[in-house]
Amino acid sequence: MNWIAVPLCVLLFALFPLTDTDIWWHLACAREWVVTWSPVREGLPNIHEYFQHVVYAVYCIGGAPLLVAFKAFLWGSVFALFLYPAGLRNRVKPVVVAIAAFFLFVFRFQMEMRPVVFTLLFLSVYWNVVPWLLARFVSGDKHAANSVKTYLVALALLLLQWLWCKFQGLYILGPLFALLCLAHTLYRNRSALQKCQMVAPAVFVALLFAMPFLHGEGVRLFLYPFGLLDRLLGISLSAAIFASEIAENRSPLTILLAGENVLACALMVVLAFFGAVYSVVRLARCRDELVLWSTLLVTSVMALVAERNFVLFLPIFLFAFIYHPASFISHSTSHIPHFFSSKICQIISIVILACLLGFWAKSLTAYDKHMVAYQRVPVGAAVWMKENPHSGRLFNDDRAGGYLAFVNPADSIYIDGRFILKTAEFFERYMRYSEDPELFLADADSLGIDRAVFPLRFYARWDRLLERLRESTKWAVAYVDGNFIVFARK
Image (tube, rainbow, N blue to C red; front, side, top):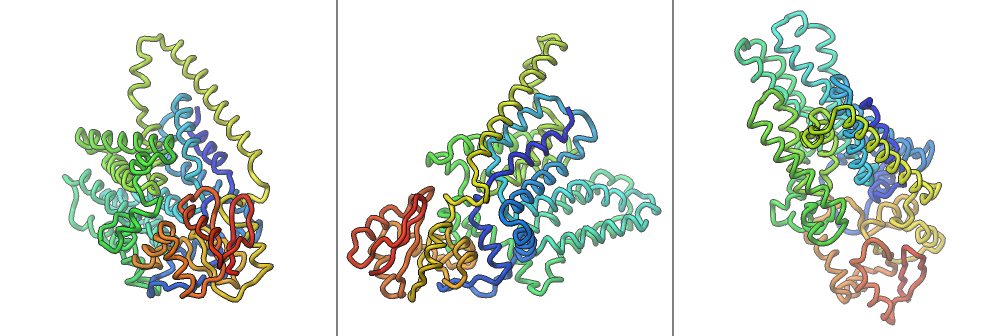
């Protein structure tokens, strides 16, 4: 079976509404930088600027449906580029494609319209091009090393890295991957390598690390990934609450033990743990494929640390799985004649793929044609609030903030998903409102809050506060639908 079947499955499975609520503040920031009325940390660069302009341009042309199609195309391209080297070497067994498709179907809702898709797209380009480029630099063939083609490719990668710096904070993965490729290339050619051959590749990798300094934010842009890592791992005391309270920053093992999203998180833990162990074993046996197994090891650990990192692991894992099919497949069928085994595998594969495509086709009927996940963002509430302006300040759940800022910019929001803009003290107080309704009521009085919007589904942390607001003599329900509720001060 052709390897292209896997990226095609990705493209199909990624066709679902805009469930990630962050996309709305990205769109709002592309139009005009969103300013919340609550305090923000100063001096932070807009690390997603280019991503925001790209998605906003697509949205202006075709709205959410076109943005969903664009998202599916990007994710399909990511997996196509990562699997391309494996596809060139050998045909893929149908059973391997079927198992890969099963993984993709289970994790299809990880393929959202987020800046990480561009990080993976750019990294997949590095995956194919950087090893080739560094090999030419150290090959000993002066014509290849000094050719116009070699330097044009190097220049194109530097330009790509410069762009990457303003798409997402994980741009640091590009130079780190190139550094790993350089170490592997130098190790493989160590016996015949001359010092003069090391200059060009070393300069190239150093320039990749220096690309943030070619932007106006300079040092702040260069330091951004380190602050992001701190808030992901909770290294400093001030970052601990962001690591523990933001759902996607938690380990899939933590989420599993909490009984949330059990099937997907259990499979995440199993795959990431297997990837880590298997890559260590492969590295211990030989270093001929240092880049593959080191990358798999790093992304496995990242996936175990935080659920949001699983999308970085999945394409690397599938490449390893397809290029080095799990030994249990051949071992478990070794006693069956080859012809019979082949037919069994083909039948099982066809059945699995047919079931997955059937489930996918059935899921399409549940989607609204506007491709906006109205269960996750306050579509109806935003319309009502826009038609009924108020004089005070608005309090909102963080996941609703981006959408409210995009559709009703005249009403300044309290918070959105850009937690990097908020201090630990502010975020901790915001989280306390769900446990201590009296604190919210006191702050609402002192801050001049006269309207508050909350979700009724998916995010259950506000139940205690909602009950208290219903009982309050100062607040009343002004709008409610099946997904969101708006309270207004009497």
